[in-house]
Structure formats: structure tokens, C-alpha cells
Picture 1 (cartoon, one colour):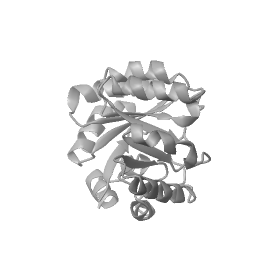
Picture 2 (picture 1 turned 60 degrees about the vertical axis):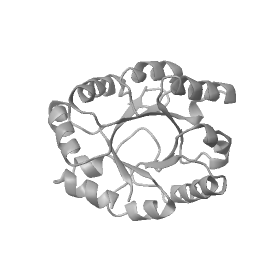
Picture 3 (picture 1 turned 60 degrees about the horizontal axis):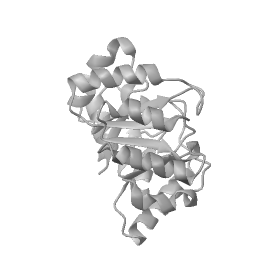
Length: 219
């Protein structure tokens, strides 16, 4: 069984509050907040995600899972930490050097928020292994970040298997999250590979029955 973090990226603005209530009733484990700045990725979702975080803070106690696809990571950490998320995840590729990456880890921890580190599909997992003892979660992007509704890249499943093996061999305690193109047809492969948390957006939001879809993905 895995936890489900439902991406709110494809939620229609005029139906947002009703949709959030319905997702909570359907027993999603997290609300996944896809923050994009129009620089690190082409789309800019910041204003919408800030608005959604405001709604969610007022209507639910479910944890927020903030995924920063941005260049100016430090400022976005400050902005989104106000909503007291359970976790803030940044991209390895956004860091200019190791010192900057370590600063982000420390900045998030000082706010009593769990730390996640993410890599794009083309980034080797070896790049982040040294940082895993200092974070709570590693997010493997199974599509190129920036757009919802993409198809999962099969090669990324091997990355999850390797990370899982590394975690086991080094007796580490952290979760593996996968994000992008995940649906009922491919979720079993991700579970077998070692995922702890599945991010799903359109496959849940566009489904006729949130509860049934979340249950199918998680079990």
C-alpha cells in the first residue's frame, strides 16, 4: 500500500473548494502543490498555488506536499512555509552548487518542515545520493516537470529501484515519491519498484469517482 498525494494543478478554479472537500472525503493523504515560476519550467503557477494553499489552510487539516519547480528556491521556501506544509521539495537541478543545496535543506529544517529533493528524468541518481541522509523524501520525476497529463517515462522506474536499494543498503529513513503520468495501468510497477508516495493529478481529478480511483491507486 502507498500513500496518495493528489496534485491540485488541474483543479478548475471555480470548483476548487468543492473539489478539495471531495478529495478529502475520498481519503487522499496529501494535497500536492505544483509551484512553477515560468523560469525553471515554462509554466507559471505560483499565483494559483498560493491561492489554493490559502483555501486549503482554511478548510482542511490534510498535509500539504509542496513541490518547488523554481529557480529562486530560497524565496519560495519563505513564501510557502507560511502555509505550514508537511514537506517542501526542491529540485537538485536548481542549485548552483552543493553549498546552496545544503543551505536550502537547512532553511527548510529550521522551519520544522520535512525536506524533499527531486530530480528530473535525465538526471542521474548518483548526483543526489550524498544528500539522502539529510532529507526526508526523494521525489523521482517520472515525466519532464512543467506540464500535467504526460505519459510516464518507463526508464524512471529503474531509478526508483536503485534509490530503494541504496536506502536499504545504507539503513536510511526516507520516503520515495514518484510524480508524473501515474494511473491505474502503471501504478503497480511503481509500487513494486519501491515507491512510498504516489503523486497523481489528472488521473484522479478527471475520474468519475475520486474515492474509487484513490483506493485503486493506493492498494
